[in-house]
Length: 320
Image (cartoon, rainbow, N blue to C red; front, top):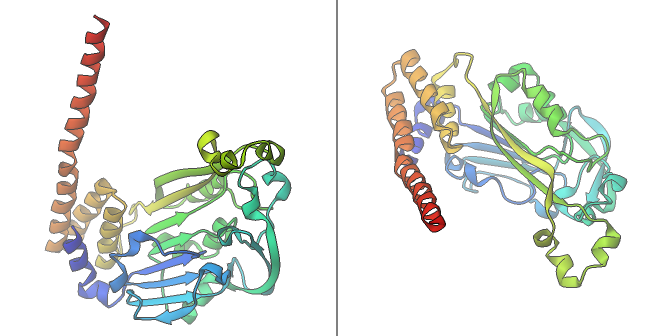
């Protein structure tokens, strides 16, 4: 599969117009899912908090081109916007943490504001235009509360061209005036996307007094002794390709990205449509690869079903 993906990324139509990955809120490492794409792709990464972020524009980073910008991205550009640097760099935001709402949660200290700075905010569309980037193929944002408004600022035409969109919206009140998961889902429901993945993360519900009544070791491992309650989500949307793709490039990338996301049924449909529309034999190879991926899972499924059946028999015999 890796060889086929690399073969697609080296085709003329993709090499001449390389995939574009955008990461907003890029503290820490770039997504591991992008490693196979990197040598053939452009990545533009933004983060205003430099504590976990290094700024450069490089072609020697493992990417065809990697641009890392110490910029605050907002729905529209402004000369000066407040940015709240929190105890954890991964919680810093252009929205003020909601201290009162966070008080009953074990991870409240991560949101303690250590310093407030004033930063210029840039528009995503304007910045990409300045960089000579015409579209976004894989969009990822973890903006600590403004995922929806930044994505919506791209406009319908640009949004509909996105193939993968990864978000990290909140469920509880962590920031004042933040974009929540339900608002994002309502926005995306009217657009040509479907939810591919959703993972729920959270914290433990315990106030400061209760936490301090525990021993030091218990406080350190509070996540192991208290139930996690949902606090935020990592959610992935895939373009549903309900509109006929306007190019082989988009079909190629749709198949590659769907395969990386393990949406093999969707990848199969894209390959079959690409074969019909463009008559390109490479789509036949993609079609066969998607079918092979699904068939390869059958032995594991059969063993799982057999194991459950045997366990049921054992329980039945024990009752006798």
